Length: 329
Image (cartoon, rainbow, N blue to C red; front, side, top):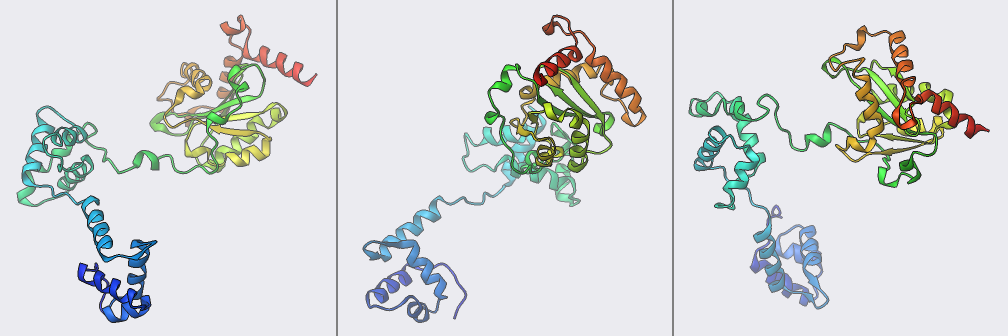
């Protein structure tokens, strides 16, 4: 029995004739010298209510091969055009591909261009020497674009619930207990602070973190908000993989978690605003390994005792206290 290859038009007419002669698929396969799974697949794919038709099967096959994606060849002329557009008008590979396809629909994709540029960087053949430093013409010349990397950086967070499903009352900021959670990073994007802000009162809870691992972040949230567990209702996070253990937080604090859309920081604008104020105490290049826990507690107190115009210059601490007393009584 020969290895499987595409069936020819002649073989399809043989299949039709043998099926009309009441031969089974296994018998057809043995006669044609094909694997029986090939025959089963051919019949299943092309059978209609009138039975198997060789002519219809061939038409479908031709149509599939016509429309399936074809591998485009990256020719020398294409490479010359890429070099010219990359170095003179400083087009990006995406713009190069889009512009070239207006005249040549078969021009290669921007992914192919990126791949070729980075291959040339590490290619030491004499004939490719002129292309070796093309990567320096890219906007981010030292960062290699990886297919889908913008998704992989964030990882997978299990059982995420979109912010769209968050109760509408949270938007009104009238009730106590709806928190927004974020991380404030320091020098070289190393761990710094966990920031949890209550939406209705702006009361903010700060915790120093030494790791961005999800297990450590979950422990920190539980430990920090545990004393006000009875008041906590919802948590809103962004899509940082550090919040992957949100379900454990939910179980410990008896709360519900919601996640913003990717790259939509404005959807948790309350905590972003508080982080903006915190940056006055801890600028972006702060090395949090040199910041003591006592200093962080001091800044937390200063932040929560600051008068806020929207509260008629009452502090978040005062508003939080008043609302929590009203809630418990």
